[in-house]
Length: 599
Image 1 (cartoon, rainbow, N blue to C red):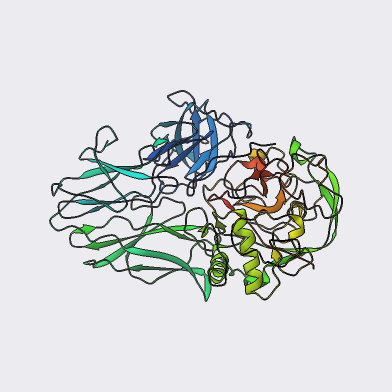
Image 2 (tube, one colour):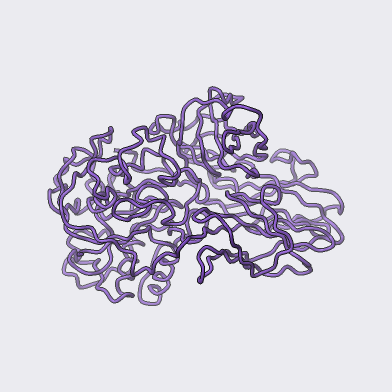
């Protein structure tokens, strides 16, 4: 069995996963590269992991990470994580299973890639894998110029209890060289001299310590400063034409015009984005690449200059919009299939058994944040309570993103609320007599507390989930078939585990049953309590529901999640892969999809 708990992995920040790991040279196909190297890089430590974040590079299509336990990193001999986006969480060594070692310092560099061209390496940074670990360095650092001051902005870091700004007139500002202020974003740095450029970094802190230095931002105070960056930037798909993106923002006082910067990867900025000058809100964008995320920031301009970038947003234009939530389910016919895997050494998915399940329906897509919020908000007005409000994907931005940061109890109650909101009978109760609908609190439901023949929404069982994922293919590794046998060769066109963040649901190809993202994007909760393998007596031949309660409250108080995602690596994209998580667990790469009994 895999370790029963794994530390928090970054929300925004997620996720390695060893696409093309192994020793590799940094030549990138030969020739002198015209690509710039990433200018900024941050490496944070965590439990058996490091998280690498870097600045975007114009014209780069992807990035390579090279890491080693010695410095300087030699790209010819270091472990390579290929074709990824920022940020990436490196949790496993080259075999994809052995975790990084706590107490070991890991050094990393990043290169930009476009076609056969690869840039020179970024600056090198390092961090210890450790447990407990400090929070990740804050992201999206911005500095706004004012009259005798600058204002620092940043995104919150999970688990942080304090933030520190270090500033100086030296571009190499660090924790040791900068003056220090403590506070929350936005934080004003006063008493500065006009006409001098100041640089700042931000760190996050908790009981385990202080994070790595963030990216550097700078601004020059002025008696007549530029306008503030636009607030409230939002991106949405045009309801009348989902191939168009609509941007809106709040006007900045004193601004006479605005600039838009567009990129194809997280981290777009004035230096890396494609400029569209003299735009105004609302702004309709056409001719964007379908089914590919686009990232946007906006700046405000007047006679004194150009502001810092706004908060970053993203959107993914689609050829056709998602169907209504009521039309997203796919029927899975009753019948048997081979449950488990004999292809690989997945001991916790053996022995392979012929399992029969009744007919059921399952959502074509992972549950979107938009659907989650619709039901969640209805539920709060109708007697429900939740531990978590849910999050829009891994980064809190994007269109048609899966909901994340919801625990097992949240999901089960939400499914009852969805049933009631849509006029179906709830299926989860707090008693075996089915007299009290489960709406509040944390209740470890057993199998008798579920109306399995009801018409309402519920979680799929492990067996149902795996049958749906296999899509009718017998004994295959993945939802699309058996290749590649080497999991590190799975491509980003097959499953999202390299982008560094969640993508919109349904933009990658479906399996033979029409189900999207059964491998990758986010992990998905199932009904079952964890069992160590399929020798467990609860794995019966017909409609196995799993044990009625955790087999071991100390070690096995775990619900099963399936499907892999933007964390843990390509080995976990296999149909039979399974991981146990405590039912209170949440993460920015973890959600679910709905099921219903019957055809």
